[in-house]
Image (cartoon, rainbow, N blue to C red; front, side):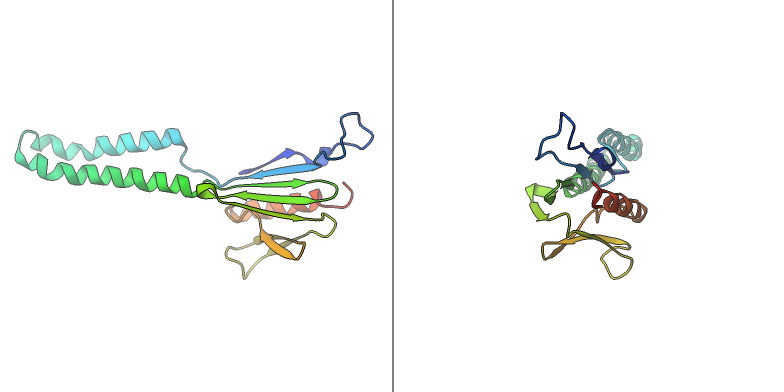
Length: 175
């Protein structure tokens, strides 16, 4: 799953424990988009593409046709490299949800340094699943402090369904 509880709400610090501080978070969730092609796979893909695209050049080595084809083949490899790099940059989205006794904070770090922050009182925060009508199926939002914000919009539909249960447990008054 492309999300992880850094501080598990099931194991929140107890008030009577020696390690408890009043400002210690009860839960912390870290979300990120799934990457089907890791950086190592990116290198292999570019190398394999360059090797396979050079195969048609072997029969024309030493002829003027080589110089006619070479710029187009290099442009194709560069285009693939550029498109994948752009995809990686656009996918650099990270969301951090932190829950304290007196507040909930959601910070979204977007591509190219964008940062958005939302805070609310955990007692008034409501987790809502919009099965239809949202930009994606099973659109997940948090409502509180007069605002409704999306969370995990980059997650797959099944992952959002699993996340709603975890969020409801983490935001339950019993913590």
